[in-house]
Length: 448
Image (cartoon, rainbow, N blue to C red; front, side):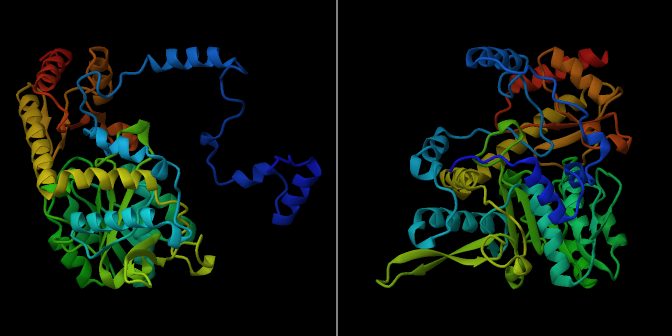
């Protein structure tokens, strides 16, 4: 198909048809602070060789996660991805396939989506899971929308422990359909504070465990309070490996689970693409976003796979759709499934335990430094510390010593007034020598 550019008259006619005067009118909802007045400050053009040299020089200024002691987390975690995962997903039948619009000739894709759903259901302790979403934050947004459809209420109460980026993503998605959100103030260990905010108009309560500060919480009592008020409980999980050691959301009474699956099978990838996990109670299945793959038999009695439920607008009328999801992050989903298959239940539990042990060792080392206060009372592989100095400045100083010490909470929520709080994560990739280097370097920077 050739590219046919629009003429000025074409553009004028299109704008008139939708009732706006100019293209700028289409962006009125974008805050002025987020707009640019001019072109991006980049060279106009270069030859291919020159572009390669320029970009390589820019990339050389970065410190790759594996090249220095690395303790960053806050929703994206550095785990070891077996070489088998990349080897399999790069096979042409996986790398080039997209979506099973014709189920009868997409049996391979449907089978791994079915296996993925089974793994997610087992991991979260829920009866049903869908064939993935974009990422954890949009999974949370879809969970809130789903809860409003189920309860016919219009308000979501969000714990102060939920990742600020997840909160903002959810607010961005749901405000357009008039859903009210009440996000509680950031708090290290106050998931249960949502109970007091539950009212007769509450559609759902959203909590995260382990939360953004790393605090792991049994949310069973929150589930009971939500259900007593006729609301649903949405449990958010940003570190999927934690479900290999902690009580599953389903065991704690969750109605909906929205999680980020990046930790299993997917590298950091500069922030994406990732894969959203979504699971729910069986009675809510018809309100789930996206699609569900099921198992059946064909005319000859052979095992086969079908799209059991597909409620997204690419498949049905828009007014009947539960979401406008346009992908299932297929390749990231497959990577997740391969890694989970390699681990198995025993392997996942061992991996989770190793993560916790590394975090405990890191916590003990930092707790011994004068002026450093451990804020997180119980954690999986991430915890928050209070420093005697501005955390962002400390991180910059440690980076100059070739140590990536963590994520300042102020980077996630600048308005929270927690500029001295640092989020520190450790995984199975953390070496004992890395922990020693972090403790030594932080002691030096703090002048302790």
